Image 1 (spheres, helix red, strand yellow):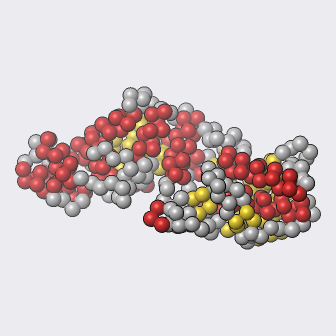
Image 2 (cartoon, helix red, strand yellow; image 1 turned 60 degrees about the vertical axis):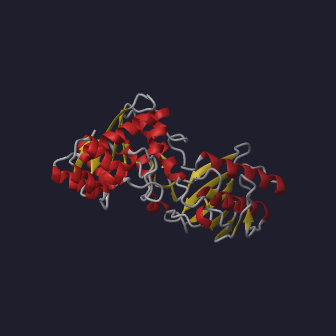
Image 3 (spheres, rainbow, N blue to C red; image 1 turned 120 degrees about the vertical axis):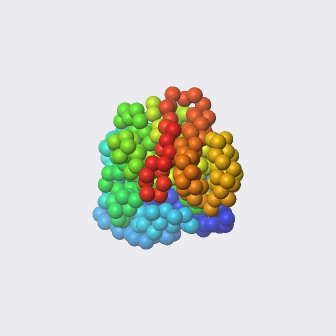
Length: 360
């Protein structure tokens, strides 16, 4: 595994790449009686990884291969999961048919790139698998007409730690990946989940969605607006991803909710709110309170604050609504990114206990 991720971290392989490798080995065994171990596959950008087989089973008319997913140094919930493919022969001219085995979800809501009722095997992994089935068929004299059932051990349990239930993918995980490679801390899967969340909300006819930085702000917004689960976007640190996608795919109303620290960064114009990629500017907070008419000693106190929460408490003690000022600034940033898209924005700022300390 190459160390060409951020900071020399190891890249890993997606569930889609593992399912492709498992299918390739299983179909090869079905045609030849022998499992290639390791099995090599071809991915975009001239990558040709080899995967060791963790499980193999040859039965009359069926072959199954399991591969343990290695996500490299990415904190992926599926790291170490056993991804399996069971391949059986299909009817003449049927091509490649996909089935959801144990631990792989089924699509139950519109708005995703797969039809309702389909197994949650995304378009690009389907393409990888189909191409590799064709290559195996050409090599060993098969027809390429197969049924591929993909499973993930403990996938239903793992899926509870993902967006899948909210997106209407029930019964397990999605088989994902556009390049087959997991880039450590690339955050691409989170941003993709935000986009799919907006797609599902739009398909369900939602006119109001909420982008929340965490579970506390999400609970606060739910109490405030009584929004259904599929209108709640787990924005995390990716405010820019929510706003840019809504600019192209608008929903009439957006509530942005989060803690004073993260939304202070949004107010200053940061769209990635992660602590490693943006910091709270206490000089900017001090300028906000100065513009609001704060006395010089409060401006000095805010400039020297340890945290945004410390600055908030100083302002609360002085009767100055720093939370409202931050909310207004965050709203201005959001409207700037939306560039006139038909999305009405309101902002809710909370403290650590989930109490609303500012709105705009």
